[in-house]
Length: 189
Image (cartoon, rainbow, N blue to C red; front, side, top):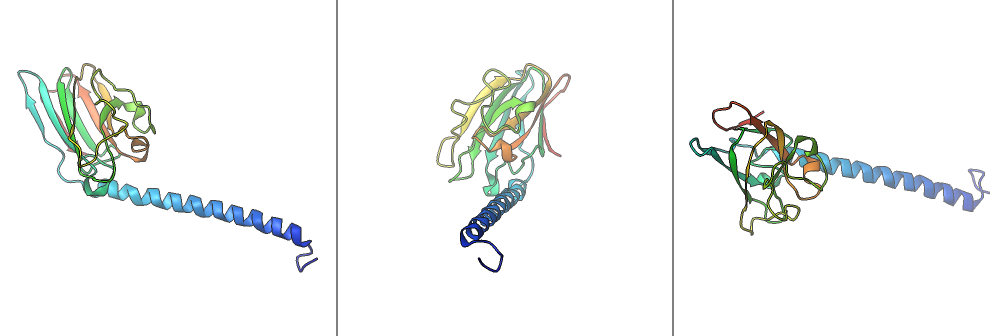
């Protein structure tokens, strides 16, 4: 017996259980802090919203996005829905995405609004609204991603990074397709 009144084997087992609980709590705390530390980085590099070139007669809009600004998980410095792109219904969107990050792959696709915080397995909201292999992404060493689609149905959609886990931690913004809108716009919330 020892000072706790337990045989040495029982004391060791009890200490091991206590240490396991402590290790689990330390891991959860470290993981939470890591995620929280990433969130400000995702939005701290935000500058002016991206410009959208628009040709009214052909109803074609060109949207240029840069992922990973300031080493964050963002588009043009915006994440978590802080960027709102609005386009008229029926607009043909030409999307180009560059990645500023050399060590983290990113991509972009247009997904249904309800999928904006999925971890993976996204479906394009419109035919052609995703580049091939969007789950792989690109780095700054790769050519830009490009895709084109027609925003045929009014509604709220999401511009998401298709690399698994990125949208889950906030790498998504808003795309609204609006009936009766005369020209596209991009604004910050």
